[in-house]
Image (cartoon, rainbow, N blue to C red; front, side):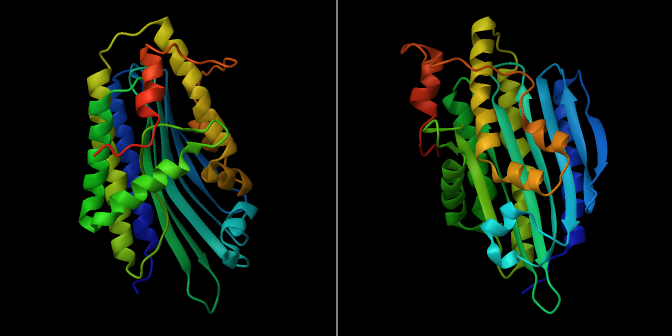
Length: 302
């Protein structure tokens, strides 16, 4: 069994953050990322990068964090009680992109590594991550492209990877109190730990690098579409679902807050503007209803 190479993982995560930020700035052409370096009192820190008021992206956050300590937060030990009494390190890159144009989907991606150690015992470690897409107006060719890239990312590692992690994504990003998916899915995996560390790390690198291949062609295709007040109002309404999921169901948000992470960095995933409307439902023969009918459903896209 190969042992984890923490330094190599961290270097990849830092370079991934750099590459994604450069690519988003290149396509936006108006705004650049502001970086905040922060330290965690209990150990570790990170660098938060946020782009706001861009030509394409209303807000985009791409965060790197590496935190460590002697005691795990309650959310972690509740999920994995065997970790009690171990010192830990957790690191990763997490991003959320909220475009201005309602025809461009919101997107999220994350890759992360966790290790818990105790003297005299083997370390407990795993990788997690994935990427998912949240459109406001559905285009079948965009969703098929997104899932084709997701499948191609998984293919070198086994025929079952895409099937399992696509289903896991559908299950995880489900807003239970609304009884609807957050978006059209993608990949989600957690607790990835095989005896071969290099195999797991290679897969995580494929996922992290595959995000731009999946997302940027959709941005390029939709950024020229004209939109108005109707589309903007629907976008802001649907952003409310994003907020609800992140604050009610997302394990990463809970872990970050309970572990003493920087609140501003954790909540950069929130959209800058959002609206709620009581008991809203779109008219049947509208593009807005088409999102619910044809896209916010469980479906095999490829």
